[in-house]
Picture 1 (cartoon, rainbow, N blue to C red):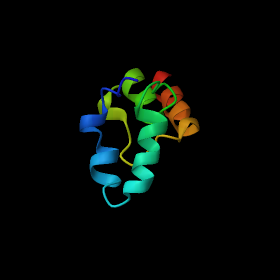
Picture 2: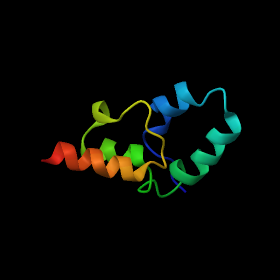
Picture 3: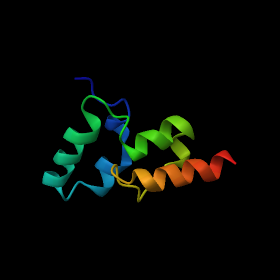
Picture 4: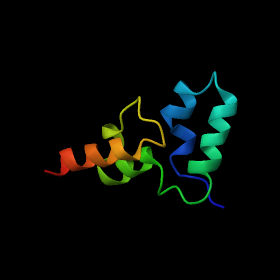
Length: 74
């Protein structure tokens, strides 16, 4: 499986999750290894750009990502 192109510089994992390694590993397996299309952060990154990804957005917050994408698309 391919690794997400954003993972090496992802502020979520490099800043927010450094003190929670078990949870970070779970998220990496679910969202960063293989098909990352379900990652809320990746969805915003590919649709709106890196600068629009909120720092507090978790990979599983797809509904919030959809809302942000709709807001910026109008």
